[in-house]
Image (tube, rainbow, N blue to C red; front, top):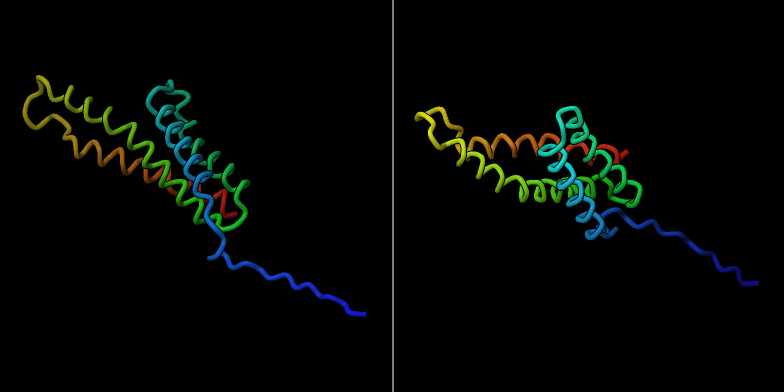
Length: 135
């Protein structure tokens, strides 16, 4: 009797493909949800803006089994890009509106405002999606 042995070969993590479509979709939805909550929600509900990236990371972590850290990081980059695309025009218009009839030196600059919002996006949108997915 010939017995056939099957050997299971584990695929290294580097060869597991990245789920680009799912990662991009979850990232864009997370970025849009974060921005909409932050800009348009009442003050009492603005805490939900911090929960949006975590929910996106948990969802992606349950859908994608391999390379969770990579998927979480890519999702957060897609979220930052989507949020930046929404926030940038609003920031530029607000800064221009603030510049009208202001004494010199008291108006926030476009670059300063944009930098503050960008740093806030990086602080809130980048680390949080990675944590639940990589556990």
